[in-house]
Amino acid sequence: MAINMKKRSIYLMPGMAASPNIFEYLKLSEYHEVNYLSWMTPYKNEPLSDYAQRMCVRIKDENPILIGVSFGGLLVQEISRFLKCEKVIIISSIKSNQELPAHMKIAQKTNLHKLLPTQWIENIESLAMFAFGKDLKRRVSLYQRYLSERDHRYLDWSINQLVNWNRSKADETVIHIHGLKDSVFPIKNIQKPYIEIEGNHSIVLTQSQWLNKNLPKIISNNIIDLDNLEGSNQSFKK
Image (cartoon, rainbow, N blue to C red; front, side, top):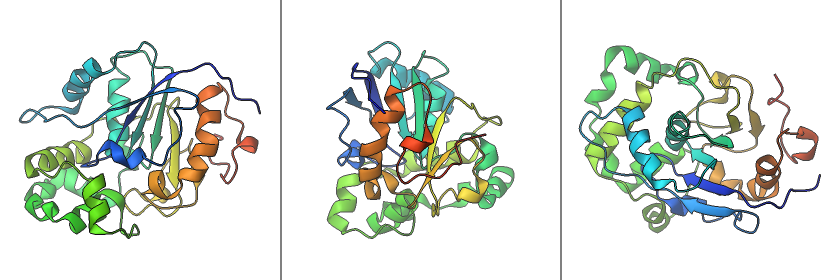
């Protein structure tokens, strides 16, 4: 399948607590104009939709392609409510609150997450497990490179917005890429359509070879032909 070489404007949004360095292994700039978004300081009790509207100021191009990882996937979906986007692609994320794991749904009803002492997440290894899942084993120096947002006020806000996300119905135009062994958002809770590949919650780091081979095809074509996505399963078909 030939890749349409027209350059698009792509905006990459990292996951909770993460810096744009998590995209360091992606090689999209050969085909497209790539822009990196980073987390802003949230206002106290700021709804995710308001935060997304503020983030729109950082997006300078018309009809962009938004790619978000994990909690960043929720954010790009909210941004797309305020901007016309060519595509929204989420990686290791969820499309609605129906896909939250059971313990997060319980927290939604009980507010138990507010008792979580997020100060402990300032410990770099604990934060890495929370952000990337239990299977990513990296040196502390690399965790420090990937995880830039460790203020407990930001983490309190992020966890609260994730647990209480009010999107109950998925937008089926969102392109969803998910690891089969994701320990943060288990694939058993993920509803079709999605593209499943090998890997865990950190596939943006561990499956960069697959992403570099297939993301240009996904970005540049209006119809996703799974026969041309190497190493993926057929879960995107409804």
